[in-house]
Length: 157
Image (cartoon, rainbow, N blue to C red; front, side, top):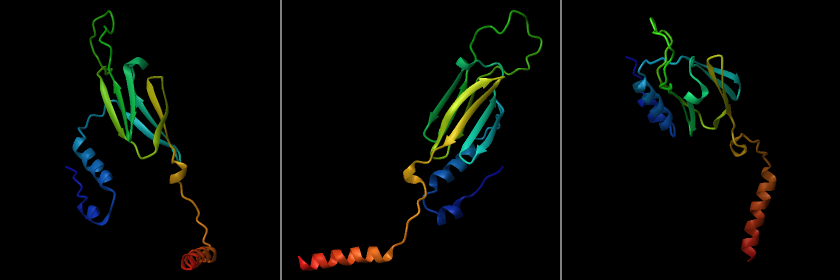
């Protein structure tokens, strides 16, 4: 059993509780169900792609829901008959599924398509302008003059 103890990290970090809870919860919730198989690719610095093998599913049998920091993909087969004949062997999985992916902050679903039995979901990280790093110029002389000017103005009043 793989169990990680994040206690030493919790003692020396601030604000990472959600990350540690998510890692611990993922370890507990991992049931070993690998259906449907999937790939996760990094397409660019801020672009990702999730590809699920969903052979036999039609677009109207798949539901993709994007919530804050969570992507849920659900597949439910229609209950209609698969064919007119009698199956001697059923090797193509036709069961329903639910896959959950935890998304980082500012990662949004950019589009989805179903082709050749593969569900392709494109993701894009869009960091708001206010959150992007900015260069701050250092001009101590000018700031010092403004602070001194305010003090002298207050003293004269």
